[in-house]
Amino acid sequence: MILVTGGAGFIGSNFVMQWCAQSDEPVVNLDALTYAGNLSNLKSLSGNLRHHFVHGNVCDGPLLHQLLADHQPRAIVHFAAESHVDRSITSPDAFIETNVVGTFRLLEAARNYWNSLLGPQKDAFRLLHVSTDEVYGTLDPTDPAFTEATPYRPNSPYSASKAASDHLVRSYYHTYGMPVLTTNCSNNYGPFHFPEKLIPLMIVNALAGKLLPVYGNGQQIRDWLYVEDHCAGICRVLEAGACGETYNIGGWNEKANIDIVRTVCHLLDEMAPASERKVINQSTGKVVKSYDELITHVADRPGHDLRYAIDAGKIERELGWKPVETFESGIRKTVAWYLSNQEWVTGVMDGSYRDWVAKQYEIGKK
Ligand code: NAD
Ligand code: TYD
Image (tube, rainbow, N blue to C red; front, top):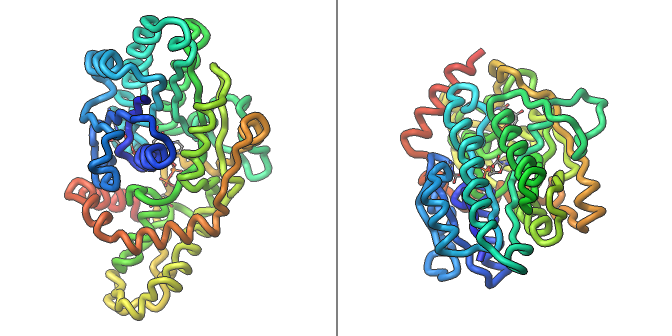
């Protein structure tokens, strides 16, 4: 079996569902169920005996030791993290705790467990650490894309905490010979994406007639990858990646934020016309004609990275992975998913979510 951490979050839950659909191997899913973790993401697995959920914290060393001893996993896939840059700017503590201390605790428990294994079991064990392209810092418009050799230059408390965790993982390979793998992926999008991040926030706000807050001029560029392609990349690295190596995963889809927001608006105009739904612009009280009239530019994010771009050549060449979705097919599926899963959206937007949005966009006002 495998142990997954953070499997009730956006990418982790997509990974666990994909895993259970494609493999008979059981999964133990350890998640603290922070505001970003939702058991409703895993509803399709209820009654599936190959999925075993454990409510717990990756910072809890004794719990990790116990889980590893009890379940004897052949691999660990580590997603658990605080993941939202804006939250890392207002409250960095949890990022240091989960992303740095949590990863350290997991490495220690895994080292202890791995040392207890013998022969083929020991040789086969892997720990895969899921990280981000944000550790590489920012690019100018004409710079070449990030490769695995690009120096780390993190610019936010989030990316700095992920960089620290990547360094710890690396050190466990070089110092202890632990069979670790690291993936650095670009921005994901798709089903179960918590509506504090750009794409789901824009969909949810637009349907409610709320303003669509674009930071600064909206010309910042991200590379976007459909979440299921990321999960398939992680599986491939787990299966065939070389220990101690890092693999960049990306979609070859660089887009400016403002273009992403306009694309979402145009898809909503087509799939859920505001006039038919009688969407009222919450700021003017008038019926919305086209969702893009809700776009508003707000104060920029402090230290906002201008551009991320991933060179995914290594994983393509060495492991034969390639994304299946284009941005056009993936974003259409994503918008359609949000339209058919309004109940999920309402369910995850609890009181703490509303407090965060009120605080963040009060700060973010021009
Ligand atoms: P998410 O915020 O949606 O989910 C994180 C999950 O981790 C939640 O279920 C949460 O409850 C859990 N968690 C948080 N703290 C925990 C703790 N102390 N102990 C146990 N569980 C805890 O994040 P995501 O977008 O799914 O990202 C997953 C991983 O992928 C993260 O490591 C992130 O850095 C990385 N990543 C994300 C993206 C992206 O675009 N979202 C891109 C590249 C890499
Ligand atoms: P986000 O989804 O938070 O991911 P990340 O910061 O990890 O890239 O943001 C994606 C881009 O969208 C980023 O450049 C910030 C911008 N953004 C906005 O313009 N408005 C928003 O309300 C949010 C949440 C993000």
